[in-house]
Length: 313
Image 1 (spheres, helix red, strand yellow):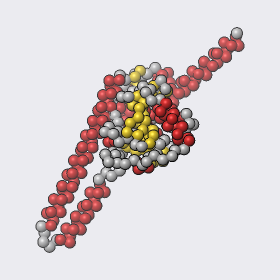
Image 2: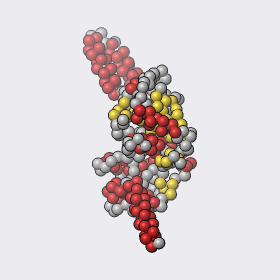
Image 3: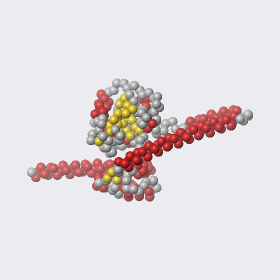
Image 4: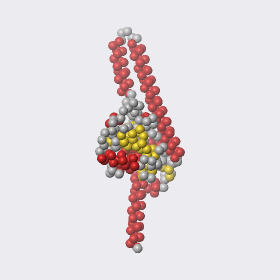
């Protein structure tokens, strides 16, 4: 009996160690609330970063952390892990504090997502306005120069130079890569057995509800779902969507094939949603509105938020 109790105690201790190591590795992530987040925000503010002092690891804090990581040559992922925490706070990360963190309200998260989408639309509108203004300025300059009877050759040279300058300043390959309504995807051909198994595994979880931070069939968020599906085939992917975007081979839209990872900008600037391309212009992902579901890469919502794709197999 004593032997059995001893084995149970040892097993429990090992599980606790694994649990705390996992928490410590994860650190502070988007959506966390409480702990020493206020102290973290004070440190960021004191260092000149635009964080708000509210005790919540909101989108604003996440981006302040990303900038801090970039400036300090740390992996840029917006997660205040043990390394980033020690660099910023000057002490070790306390896994017990992290384990006891609360979560931001669903309403707050939804509001931040909506604000992020609105900001993206405003930036795109402003960029379009700037481009139109530049074209108008160029046409006006060319027209005025043409009125100079003795400067025809010079006018043509200037006009050509202006056109080249405007083209070089016009973003043709920005972070967002909207798909034109008439875009035609490459016809899906024969897929390998390994890819077929991944697609089959991915479709097994259709209807599983969306859970913020979820990474199991009881509930997924987008990157947790992608990571879980590929892990079933022995492929280890990073946890967050923006980190997943950093691995693999970049694939153009015309070359998308089943099994490729597709990425979108949703609630905040940059990569914030990932999914698995299944062919014929469709992908499957865990969405906050419908759980795990299939959608068109080129529909009215996803088409204008498409960023790019990566091939990891």
